[in-house]
Image (cartoon, rainbow, N blue to C red; front, side, top):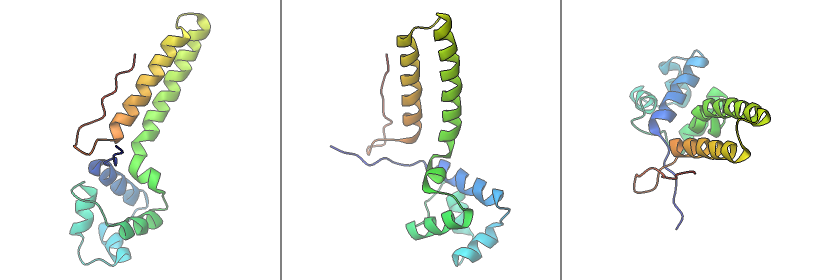
Length: 133
């Protein structure tokens, strides 16, 4: 059975606020651009209490000049940088003989599942639980 991943409202909200602030836009300016009646909806999105409708989400992505991946997975970049750093460290240790390839693979697998676990939940609300060796 396939499941639909649930996205983190708080993360999307933080990303919406970060993008708005990066463009030096006020909530009122965003409200005017979207042609919505009240700024309360924007505050709810940025606080992670609700999602914008699909057409509104696309309008926000256009306004902020970002893609869907950046809006939904922004923290992934931080994890990716961490992964690159760990990979470099592990590669250096493997060359010096202090870390076997199997140990390095295990570390990378754990980091991958750590990243997946941060962004996906099952339909019943439970986080994915995968234990790497």
